[in-house]
Length: 235
Length: 235
DNA sequence: CGTTATATTGAAGTGCGTCAAAAAGTGTGG
DNA sequence: CCACACTTTTTGACGCACTTCAATATAACG
Image (cartoon, rainbow over the protein chains, first blue to last red):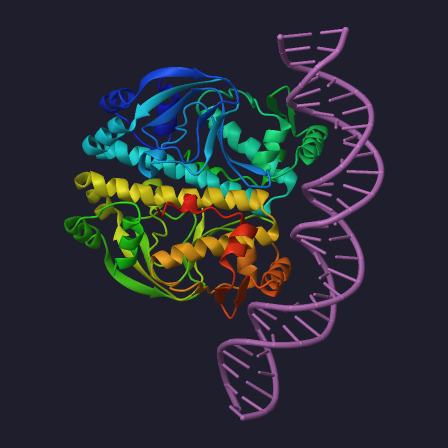
């Protein structure tokens, strides 16, 4: 069940067999949620953290004028709200992009883990720090990259993250987002997102259609994004 | 020496007297660094984390075309690179905005702390999670707020953070940044930053000049920013 | 087969960038 | 104290990336 989480963790740290089973026992049974379900609501008190097993999920924040910003996209093997363990509530919503399967880690068990395994505590801490690193890269995108560059950068990031958990064996992967949602990641309107995707497609760089990203020219995509994977801490 | 750090921590958690001295003993002697000094360079291997005692510091990332994005501003009492303890190196630079005084926490001591105090470990973990929450809010700013709103939002955030550590007793505070640097926080050019500041000044909302922010109409500033302090987790 | 989401395209508007020059401030050495 | 160089701020004119509005097309679905 936690294989993909382990792939994530082992990209940076050694996890022993005993530690693996300690992690395993963090979780109680898994659940299915439907597409567009709000999994965690901003401000709600939290008693558990959630691991994404299958499907795609985003974090988002809203402004009063109706504008919305997606601040992260989560792929299988990601914790959705591990930061909620120390923060007690979230400053943002967590919403399913697609149908998803999730597992719960009660905060009491996480607490017990921090009391008994300093190493695993550091490993989980590190996971939330990698979340933050991706937030910083998105700040760079939103503040400094062109529209096309933001989309290219997002595709580069997702390819590497999905490849790590075995969901992008060749240079292609499923991505169940509408162009509107993609625009909400990139700080663009759906209209402009559509235009930028068309350009990327016509230039033979990347093709996004039918909820699937097919990368045709990885070097060109990285160049357009000015992509440097250091921030993903995948070694 | 760590009074301001403690103010930060105690905004969310109880810290006992023994814990206070455990935190105290994390640090070895303090140092002065000059304005514009790069304190930590992206990619460098790290053996210690740094606490900001006095002065202002930012985190920044660059693109090849010369554009730069500041992803965070740090105020006294902030850890600059506590995330470096688990990440081993940073994905961004850490640079002094003004002359600054810093103290060092060797990673060996942080490691020891995680082995001996689960509670303090969770408390420090929480600090990095609050960093990430600010990153998310900046993503919202950069992706969805207008130029004026981004600047207003930044001023709102800094007021509350500085007030917490006693550096904004009334609705005003020192902020040693140029308009170019302010623009690099907000994803704006120095020219447009200047125009937005002029508007805010002429509307009687906030006055930024001589490296000092004077808030004239706190309600209007919050309204322009669509500011909600939940993400600062100050309770 | 209609009904509703999503994607595409066009035309026009605007917030912000770019370029350039002037004005104001800051520091240095004489 | 002034003279000088340098940085920062301000202002104007113009251009462009992206938005807005609106219509059409395409796909998804009961």
